[in-house]
Image (cartoon, rainbow, N blue to C red; front, side, top):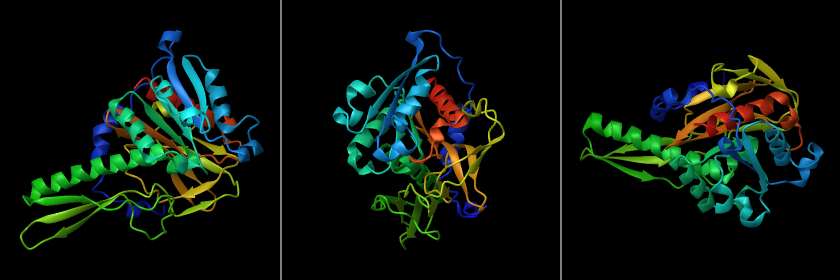
Length: 316
């Protein structure tokens, strides 16, 4: 499949540490309100969503989750006070489900970094949906994971060679830039060696994007790569999303600790569509299917993925 052969290998060091902890049995559904998992669904609530959702996309997801036992669910929006992200909301949030698209830039980087801090502390976990690959919390989470992976690889190189290695960070990619198909895969590290046996390692942060997409609503097929993972509970081996936007690899993000779902299209495109990253004591899950004008989040199996992820992350 296109894109796999060009994947970098030196940033994969964080994967092994998380896989053992990552695949754990889903906790039994709690029966009391005191045990409920606190979930916040964040949404831009764009007018374009009305093509597929009578009461906005985020409310559709929140409405489904509210019907499930053991979950305490709150729906918030970009235009709420504090963009729906005040301490009064996040202090009571175990799992943050995020959908954004056209107004991503209205969430400041420092807000995203505050969410990342909560993830690293283990008080909050993030689920990013579809176009939220460019959301501020997801980008900041991927940037931080890229730094961690790169510094681990640089430290290993210094230990093996005995050389002194200066580490610097390049300017991040311009936000909302689509990488070309032949662009160097990010994140990555570039190296320069000097005659005095010192080296300089430069960390390049990820684009958090991919070179191709198509918005014609053609169906995709989701293939379950890890059938025993809690996020895959109750899913068939493969299933169709009848209408969705297409994204094509390579996805410029740090190597995931686990790729649970892969998505394919009739034209040969493919995408790692259900991926998990560990970040400190918390986790990030990215689920790719979507687009606000297609009723993806009315599909029972798409909603099952989100519910499974909420339960697994909420009991991690």
